[in-house]
Length: 141
Image (cartoon, rainbow, N blue to C red; front, side, top):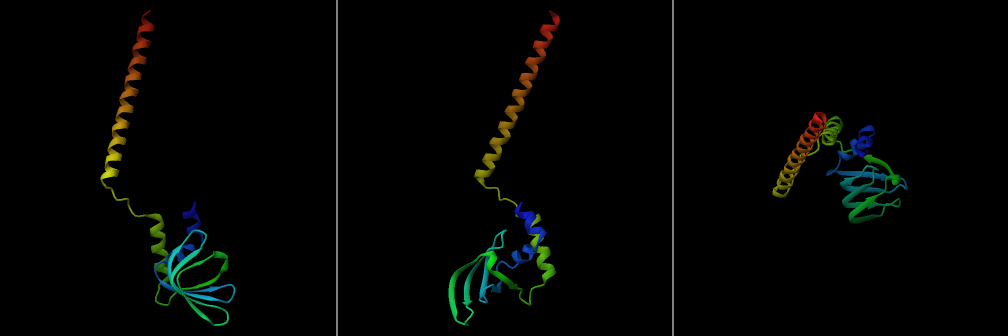
């Protein structure tokens, strides 16, 4: 569901800015300049290495800064970023997530699952065979 929401609005564009330094204008005429670490499906933004500028022009430094989606007025896209490529690459990440790395634990789990499926098939065949034998014995009588 979150992926569907991401694709149907400009959240895709914002998620493409993760890892980049941007300027975010807030509704109270403040501004936040820093590196975007994460943007969730509600468009809440987590930033690091931030300089917060209040409406009076005073600047404050923060290691980590969280912005609630309702407080965002604008996210300024850096001039060196190609918007079309950014959207396409963000959509590719949503459509084709990274493949899961198979480690020893995962491979053992997959092997056990295959063995269990084989046992289930054997049990089904045995039940079917018993059912056929029962039907054959009742039809002879």
